[in-house]
Amino acid sequence: MLFARYEASAQERAVELPASAVSLRVLSAGRGPDLVLLHDVNLCAASWAPLLPFLSGYRVHLVDLPGHGLSDPTAYQPGTVREQTLRLIDGLLDALDVPAAPVIGHSLGAMYALWHAAARPGRITAIAAIGSPSGALPGVRVRMPLSLLTVPVLGTAVLRSSAPRPLYRWLLSVGLGADAEAAVSPELLDVLRLSSARPGNGRTVAWLVRALNGPRRPRDETVMSEAELQAVGAPVLFCWGSEDAYQSPDQATASVKAMPSAELRTVPGGHGCWLEDPALCAGLAVEHLVASGCPPAA
Image 1 (cartoon, one colour):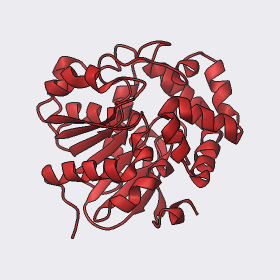
Image 2 (cartoon, rainbow, N blue to C red; image 1 turned 90 degrees about the vertical axis):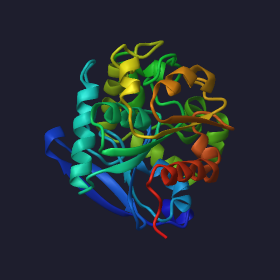
Image 3 (spheres, rainbow, N blue to C red; image 1 turned 135 degrees about the vertical axis):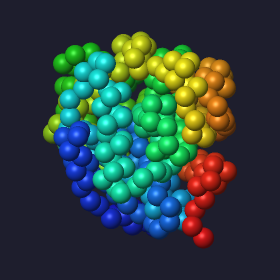
């Protein structure tokens, strides 16, 4: 029903990642060159549904990250997330039988792609980062609702409960921006809300948020160094909401300039700008992929 709303269809499958000891749910749609989409923390693969009508010509793989959607939960500890992420993305591409592919990522998903591109050059051929990429760049501030999740026990308890629709809409408004929340369809809202309350997901998300962040700023190991930014050789487009509450486009300018091939495009909206204007964000992403040598099929 959710994908039908956006006149799209997707095939569901579980991919096994032995090295990460998890099974991931992947939704694949369309035909053409492979394109991987990685979502933000406490969202899921279905959150990309509004973007699908604008990504024709690609074989799009929407991934439920561990402990999100219908993928297996996992455990995270401070200092371990980067290595787990590198292993996860390598295993995901292997399981999809994709030697190399571009990635569109939002927030956490964009940070994962940047980490991987810096440490494993070649497998990610281009990146379209939508919204501030979580804690990857210096200057990010941790704010509600993420700051709440850094509190031991409390964060897990909050995530384990199935929030009523009005409360969940408020949480989306705080996290993604009021206009993004208003753009979320009832079908997508229920998928996100029920996914976040799935057994094991709340615990995974709470562990992940605490492993990445302190109550006010990301942990040092989360933030990319100058040398790591310079090691991101894949072409990167930052599609950044002008009202992003976690980090402004101006604060990111120096970090973007440190990358060999990166561009910052400011768009109207907040952290969830792809929900506010999916045609604009997808158009910029596809334009970037074409310029990076990853055009869609005719």
